[in-house]
Structure formats: C-alpha cells, structure tokens
Image: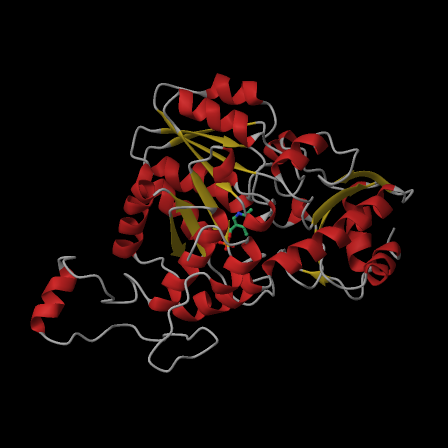
Length: 388
Ligand SMILES: *Cc1c(COP(=O)(O)O)cnc(C)c1O
C-alpha cells in the first residue's frame, strides 16, 4: 500500500489481502501449517525459490498483515512480530550481539529489560553499562571498543524521562553501534524513532497496540538487512506471534490514533490537576511545561502520551494509601489500556531491581504510576482524591 497515505488510513487499510471469499473485515488464519499443490511446490517453498507460507512458526498470513500494518505506521522497511515485548528485545540481543560485545542502555528502562541485560545476556558474555536516559555525555563516556548496541525507552517507565533520540542516534552511528528504541509508550502515532535516526524500534504490542488488555505480543522494526537475522532467530527458536493475537492487534491498530489522542488529552488534564494537589510533591508528565525535557518531548512526540507518574508526600505508606482507597481504578502492573491502571513501581514492576539501582534511577517509594485510560476525567480524579 502506498506510503503516501496518512497514518489513520494506513491503520485501517495497510496489508489487506482478501481471500477467495472477499471478506471485508480481516480474516484470522488459525492454522499451524499450509498445504502444497504438489511435491515440487513444497520443495521450492523450502529452498525459498517460491514465496508462500509453510508453517506458522515461519510465517502466517494474519501475522504478516499485522507486520505490514505496523511497518507502514512506523515508516520501517520491515517488521518482525514476536510473542511478547520481551521476546522482541531478546530477539534483537540474540540476533545482533555475540559473546564479548558491549551494550550501553538507559538506566530508566522496563524492569524485565534490565534483568534481561543483567542476568540473561551477561551469562552469554554480553556486558551492559547503564547510563542516564537524559545525559548524552554519559552515553559517550560509556562507549567501549566493543560497544555494539545502544538501547533506550522514551518516554521512560515510570518517570517519563525523555531521551534525545537524534543526539544518541548520531553518537551510536559515530561509534559503529546500533540504536534500538522501545517505542511502547508512544506508539508510531505519537513518535517515530526511525525518523530521528534510530536503527531499530521495539514494541510491546501488549500495551497500547492492543489497548484493551487482552493479549501479549511484540514487534521489532527496522531495515530489511537488520531484520533478516532477527527473523532467522525467531523462526528457529520459536517466540513468534500467534495468529489469534495478531488478529487482535490488527483490529487494535484501527483505533490506535483515536485512542492515543484521547489517552493523551485525559493524561494532560490529570497531570495538571495532580500538580495542584497539596499532598503531591512532584508530577512526571512530558506534556507539562514543568517537565525538564518538555521542549525536547514536543520535538519528538505529537503529544505527551498516556502515562503520568507522581510522587506523594509520605513515602510507601502514603502511596499505598492512595492505591488502596481507589474503587474504580485497576490495581495492576499493566498499562496502555482503555481502563485506567494504577501501580506502585517500587514494590511491583521495579521490585526486583536493587534498592540502590532504584534510587539511582529516581524511583522513590512514594511514586505512583497511572496508565490514564478513557474513563471520564472527573471519575478518575474522584477515585484518586480519596487517598490524597
Ligand atoms: C511491558 C513492556 C515491555 C515488555 O513487554 P511484554 O509484552 O510484557 O513482554 C517492554 N518495554 C516496555 C516499555 C513495556 O512497558
């Protein structure tokens, strides 16, 4: 489908290939394998002489549709779908790194990603240095001769720090490393990291791309050349996306723009309201003028997104009081859902990180993260105010 279509059009139309039945809504192909016309066709498919599906661990039409649609939105040559966001991050590590390589990563990344670098990749001889998400000089200082990958998330989880993608991409290029950006919080509707020089985009589709908390999935996007080994790793080892999940994501993408705009509008108003609450000491939201990287955020993102974090006075006890006094909000570690979610990062998503590392990353015991949903703002506010 033509690249010149607007994002809202691509979200609805990119990748459609109708079957013999001319269905209007996208079909779901629940089949583990595919049948060949004859032995010769089977042979040609296996050696790649003829394109076509063989087995759903390799390719599946519903998964291919999801990949085509997301690639169109991110402006990427190719997308490779994975079973989860973590499978996407594992895939780039296993496909693009080898023993003896070095990674520079933002310290403000998803908890499981920190564990992946610190525990899993380390076991295979890959070392990671964690640096500030916002201080480009720290990235430069951490570079070694064997640095192959830069990894960041912007806005970060849960503090919504903004990394300068253009500056860090230029630095990566100058030392022969690749830059991978986890674009989970923004989705391509709000931010397209490849446009700012990143080499790879990562998604946990589990979050906004589904947007309704139903299934897990992920994606890796980039040039055909970079995606080839990523696809090879997945095809061989198996953490691929299921056809059912791909179908859920395809339908989720159709409303992604509307949802991201609505999440952002609710989040901005909630953040402004939280700034005026006497027991709130600090609010973290890129759309606020008080955010330290507000202007950089506006350069990279269309809006501030749907995640708001705030620090309450009184540490863990005060934070738990706010959470336990809610009646409507969902107390869950997930985010990016139409229903508003509330999380205490220090004791849940970031609990397995050492207290020192947590403190270094600025995740205090009084911090609360809200994945702002699509309920009426007044109802979210009245649920939060009880414990404030
Ligand atoms: C949830 C999340 C992941 C991991 O995705 P899963 O689908 O849960 O494996 C990675 N990065 C970010 C920013 C996330 O929020």
